[in-house]
Length: 480
Image (cartoon, rainbow, N blue to C red; front, side, top):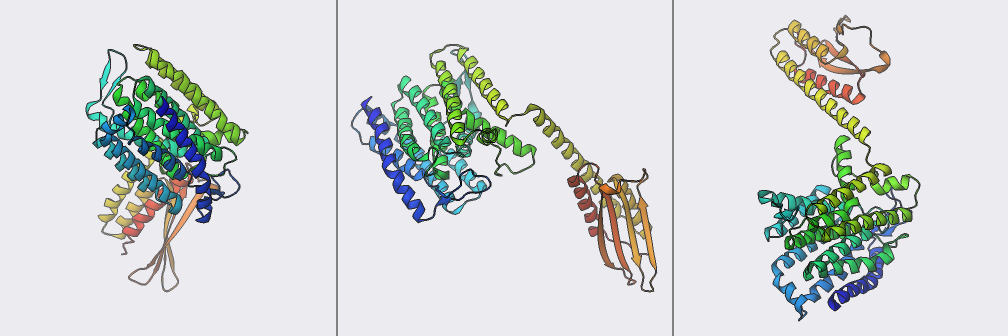
């Protein structure tokens, strides 16, 4: 127990010492986060606090390798897995640090996380089985790799996304580390206990400078490092115990950022935005919008995390299906919390899913009409056949009218026009597009106009105009 205490206090002391130095360094090299549309702070804040967390935790973990006691021996017995974990976590830390200093594309960071997770899986750190009950052991088989990768990358990004308020990500991560440490000590897993206590100590010291009003942010170097090493360590911990609680406890302790990430991804998918697109609709943002102060929001989320993690610890002393029931009940509690706060609205979600499905169906139908019109115009051999094909395409694409105006050299103007057979359109909802086609072989200037009724949406009308414009561009007027 002395080693556990020394590791925790040592990393906490190092964090208290190194964080002020990192604040000074960040200001010297201008590694600061300026106020913006997505931020809440009103002044520039140093954003590479993860350097202090990394140095504090890794220094103690490396020092344990040289201890001549049972814990040091246990570290050396797992040197392959631990060396891989430390190297990949260091790699992720430097990816985050470069992002804090120079800004990296989100896809590049995601690829780096995936490669690091693959390296961890390659040395055998994988979830191969889950004991739902004492009798029911779920063997994952070929699903072991993808599920482990999903867990590591998912948790890494969940912790990263939770770093939106002063002390939020650091506090949640500290609670998660404490929960995993308790489980590891309970199960006699000294290596995992030391890992988590080193991280928890560094976060404790860092929080003195990171809690509201923050003097420093952990940045991506801190949040990515924490998320990755907590996720990978929880997998390593669950390998020693196939019981459901091995993964359930870390999941519950990180329940708020995990659910927030899932709902954020769903929201971006339904809004047809990139999964990596930033927004200001996270759980903590919603609580701030409700009128709570930043400090109160963070404390509220701490309390939720402590409650869910505390209730989850009852899973360690239960048998059979009781642990599963506890897990499901706590998940329901988290869902209710998200429902009350605002990020989860079932009615709005169903409406958004229906709208997205309807939009995709319209796009598919319009694409089929476009491809049919392409063939028809390609086979046209005269101006009459060309115009007939154009009119058929206009009717099927639900256009209001199309016209072809020809200005001859002698001043004569010829116009062919097709109008939709239905009643007069609402002119206030009509979009007109004029396409100058240049001059024909006879020197006449030709101009094509199309009108689209925006009864559905402006985006849909614009898409139909784009498709029809492409038809005219690819298959110009046939004269004669």
